[in-house]
Image 1: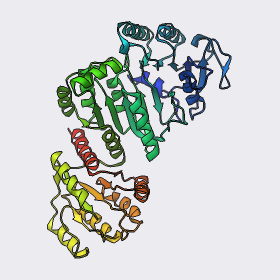
Image 2: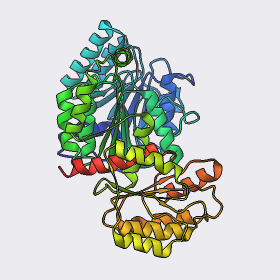
Image 3: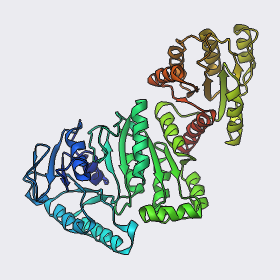
Image 4: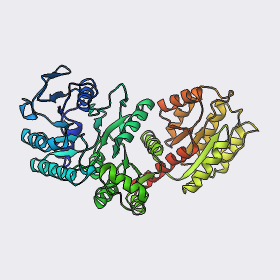
Length: 467
């Protein structure tokens, strides 16, 4: 773990969140189940290797660590402070953090802009103090941050209740802590790694554009995924995305698309959602891959992390059960993608080597009698065809003629440098086979629609990258 701060970077301040060498937990509680106690537990009992300082004037020790009456009493340097205290106490503590020389603050507490003018005024004054001392603030009204490398973990969700993912290359930014918990647990269950996670809540200071710019220069991040109910500064956000989308994919799920949804966003984080049609149009102009559902956000991010980008929109399909391919075809056309038209050489090769009952078209339908050899011939031949940009491989793993070893075959085809997306739905055996494929770097989707959404994202991201 590298705890050294980057030098000479204009966004250097954000390193103090993710690479913090020491953390103070203000509002640390002696009572298990209290937010201040669980945040401390996440840092102390997790894999974070830096120094941790509980701040609670009414306690001597918590979890074996000496407590301090305020951050000013801590004898050592502190990079990051995590605040879990009532809003009315926050201003004094932010001032003390500034005097202490702390550079980064995460305010987990709610009760600010989202509840009305009084809370908004406290929030404004927090930022005013922070700017005077050169500090940055994430939050308030959030669950905080997580770093896959340094294992900085400010969550008040215990490990008994929420899994933590391994180190990886997907960064997830979210206005909703609830969606943040789900995304992280899905990733942990699938063995998908996370580079950075930020629940930014009311974004009083650090906003999504600041984070996108920072992640654009982060060598640990390959994909930036975002759940947003609103955009704080539209022009700043779009200009940042236009620049960073040329470096790495940015995937966004925007909620608050209706008038009623916009009002719900106001009550959640005190944010105005804005016109969805205008925002969606702007996304296309600045290189953002927009998705429709939360599941799609996760699965598209997973595909972008695991696969190369697509050279074009032409998709080939191979299957041992044609039904899902019909649905996939509809989705391919509706999304403006294309069915690959094979060369005569490809068709002849497939007809020569495959059984007579196999249908050579798009999809290549191997029927329920398909064997591992049939898949090997089809996949290799299709990937060698220059008219194929993306290959979707459909599996009915329940069909007995198909040997289990097919999961070893497909990953070997990554040498062709084209995206390979698998589709399989079913029970325990199918899930076991799917996990084996994903362990070998092939993403598996349980529905044709989600698989095509991933293919579409691989194409769009490549187009934005080449602009």
